[in-house]
Amino acid sequence: MHRTGMVKAVVVLALALTLAACSGAAVRQSPPRTQPTPAPVQVQQPVVPTGPMRIAMLVPLSGDFAPIGRQLVNAAVMAVFEDQQTPFEVLPFDTRGTEDGAAAAAASAKQRGVDMVIGPLFGRNVPVVRQAFATAPVPILTFTNDTTMAGGEVFVLGISVQDQVQRMVDFLATDARHRLLVFGPDTPYTHRVLNALQTPAPGSPVQVVRAAMFEPGADFNSIAAQVKVLTNYDQRRATWREYQAKLIPQVRAAEDPALLLEKEAAVFPPESVSFRMLTGMATAYRQNLGRGRPAAIQEIVSKIESVDAAPAEDFDAIMLPFADENLIAVGSMLDLYNAGRPFAQVVGTNIWQQENLAIEPSFHHAWYTAPDETVQLSFSQSYRTTYQAVSDPIAVLGYYAAKVAIAAANAKARPVTAAFIQRPTGFPSMAGSVQFGPANVMRTPLIVYEVTPSGPKEAVVQPRPTS
Image 1 (cartoon, rainbow, N blue to C red):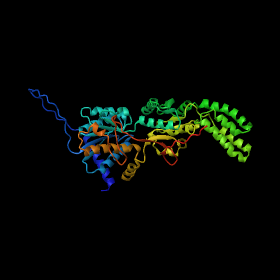
Image 2 (image 1 turned 120 degrees about the horizontal axis):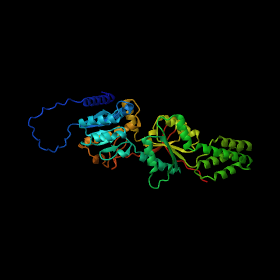
Image 3 (image 1 turned 180 degrees about the vertical axis):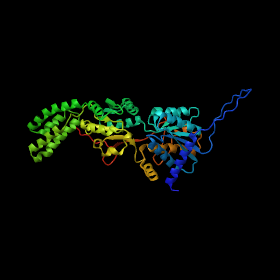
Image 4 (image 1 turned 90 degrees about the horizontal axis):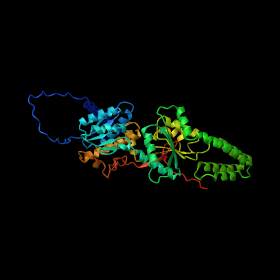
């Protein structure tokens, strides 16, 4: 059978087994004894698993998040087929993406006597899964990025928000950007990002100046009003109008307008947007002198008039920790209010890994953190070949988790202990090594990527002009 057909067959078979396991069985009650005899107290010995190692995957296979759940299962099956000599069973259970669904799926998985649990997808569903296995603890490799869930038998596969924030903060500091705005929906993820930013590593030079959140489901106008206030647009616009009214007559009357503009720029720090803007105008004047002094002056006046609001001096970067349908709109709003590039650096997290950002001019040159895409390229290509589909960035976590489980099966590590998963050597794979520290959080080297019209590329800090 072709490999694609084999993979699909295994998934279908596993799903069929899962449905059979969820069907339940009748319980026959024994007749009461006329003279009950107290049973001797016995210490129940743990059951030693036999047969192939059984791995439960608790993922949404129905509902809004079913496409993600199916990709996670597909990725795990890919890992299984890379090592077909190991007796191994992947048993998917449908969580429906809900807490009740996760509890029911965990109960069914426990009845099957699984050796390890992969999932659930959401951190909010982890507590019910942990509770289901409290009396028969097994490792739980969850896909959430909420590191507060890690500990004991629970391991976090998702990319840590704290790690991403620290990576971005360090990168902003190398670009001399130290004052940050945060804007996003009122969700647990935004709160985790904000908390990580407000509790930075000792000595971090980056500080949150202001933060605001909009209600999920808020309309365009209300979000725009919040962006306007957050970026202090009205005051910056009034400030620029006043400055413009003074600067234009001085440029027209100056013997050397370029020297005048450079003196104006010297008032501002060399790394500031105002400094770069005014020195850029001085350079433009000199470049246009060949067309005659009146034409060169008119070029500068046109540039001054084209600026809508003064560059912000109290912030130089904006964190947008979300990726829903409002992201593109907010990027356009930042442009409208002279608060995006080049006035401030727009940044995000790995949830920005989406193709539509490349076609949005307001996000060109924006930065976001993500795992090294070159390391995961082999996985992405293999997934596309096997399933004739492009994998979601989160799908590789299903592959990573299955690699850990297969290593346990090969080592005959039954029961699978936390120490085995935390082993320093990690677990090699074609998508890079899978390693967990003592905090039960997967260690993922992060890169800062820049959004470009042709796709993401590794960001590089450009040298700033000096006075």
